[in-house]
Image 1 (cartoon, rainbow, N blue to C red):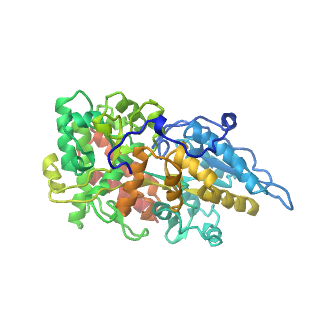
Image 2 (cartoon, rainbow, N blue to C red):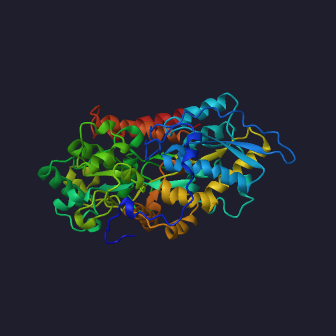
Image 3 (tube, one colour):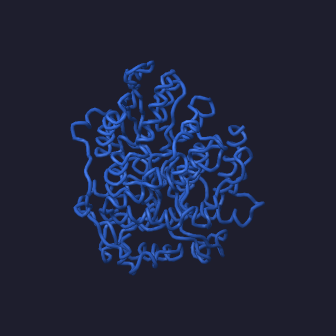
Length: 513
């Protein structure tokens, strides 16, 4: 970690290994690189149309016949570099597994669920797909292979998956997915040039608590011509809130839902859990109030993909959807200074502030007064879950599992993919040290890794551990859309928790039986 807040530019981002595919391979993929979500995590970025990729030939293969494995991916079109790497890696997989070849199909994260649903409904599922939370519905409908039986034959799965990977791959005691091929996490992002002018000298210390951060935002708002804090308030990008909601708690305590998935306890606006209700409800109100006080009029529609250009051009000073992916900043400006850089940097990643006892009084939210917590954030993983479908042949299922293991375990794919082309945490925990040893990482990437290691369970997936069938609509619609409506002024911050609770309880009653 660059504990001194050193700077990194793209020119300094040393690539210690190669392995990139030739540029010509890019044309073989459908679609173009998208910018949605965290660069894709639940976002609405552009990408390929998915197509149907043919009939997945070779399904009845026998003897030495090559079996074709249809693979549907969204991450494969997140940017041009990762796109090329996926394509060349499919060839690498085939060369190492002579009885299989891969038919790689793509769709953006905004389109993949519709594309996958259409294929499954038409009886033409891929063998392996980045199905995300939608995969739970396929699991419920008995349309997925027995992933546990595949895992039993390995010495890596599921135990070597990251904590978030294990959270999302398991549902009520069964493994319905291979896990996520990579994770990213949510953090605080600041513009050092702005914060140094506001008196910040050591951002790790001076912005450690919500009271400190809030006071600094007020100073920036009063003294500088810049949006002090921009909420990524479009429902698909309010994972920012998912992250800092955890900072009211310690020990990885879930702010929203607990207990058995068959009969969960909803914490939101729950008068029988007064202390925890105050923390959960208070952070919902804080999300709305911070946006009202500091963010632009576009905050309710703001996507995280807008932020790099806004921050690098001096229009936004901070946000809470900062990721490890340095390439998002370098794609706007190759000269972007990542890190504190003596207060002259363009972007720096920090852990979200932790709740302190005085923040509630400072911001005017009684629920938060007297409460404290620890740094924490959301870890993406459910969106990146890969599943094997049962309606393809046994040989294709076996090929899909071999491909999934390759994407998790083979250094020729893993290290360039997540260390160079789309900076992220590898899906297998043991790969993290190998990645760190292989690359000189930018400040935001190194700090995001440090945050996840240092704060442990405080960085967790939102929804995966709930073990409820309607996880996705609860996360995206009942929670995020309701909060986004409050940011847009459709209901007050004070009443928002009760609106969220009513919608979540109705959803559980109707869809979790």
